[in-house]
Image (cartoon, rainbow, N blue to C red; front, side, top):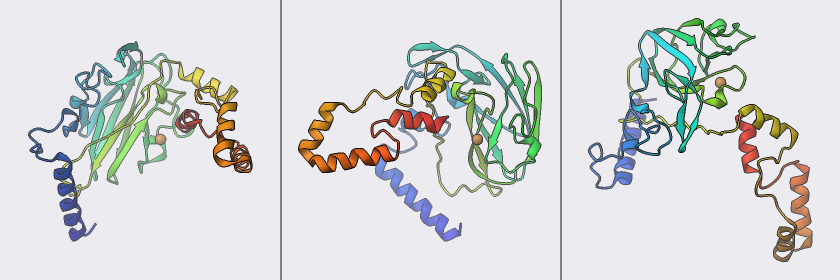
Length: 262
Ligand SMILES: [Cu+2]
């Protein structure tokens, strides 16, 4: 990015921040979830989990990550997500372009696990895909990933073993550019994830058996009658035929989202 572009982008972001922040004296009265370190996992804000994500940043050249399964409060109920360094989703991994890193991953799960570094440029045997580039991390063992950081940007890591990712085995990664200039005055990491109290294997099986399993908004005969009244018979039939041709349900947003996740 040229210096001029960087400057313009900064001014734009600053103005945008002031515009949205109004007279809230940005930086002094900012909302808790707008903290540079983030609080999205804090029970103070949403009651989502009993962990303050704010302290969960790991950095340096020698990093330890421990995978286990712990009881956490999610949406007011007790769940057993997979945790990384005691939180779920895992900590923000903060690296710098040009550095070397050793990441010791200890598996305290009863099953084999892995961490795939999504989008990283690295040697194939450090990629973390079991059965392809390494054998996986057996229970009660530690695998050390070791590679050079050759890029910068925003990435994420996640398990490539079974459906562990759906149980919370994932986390964000920020790699700072070698000159430290991210081209903005402030940054926020937002990682969206979803939680189901169902076993992800059951969800997977339900969707394979009946694609509309989680579609609670199926169209009914009265919708068809209403459509005919509004759009006419021919248009209604045409529209129904279009969705049928695509083999999709127009109201199956949830199924669509779950299919993408898996
Ligand atoms: Cu990935």
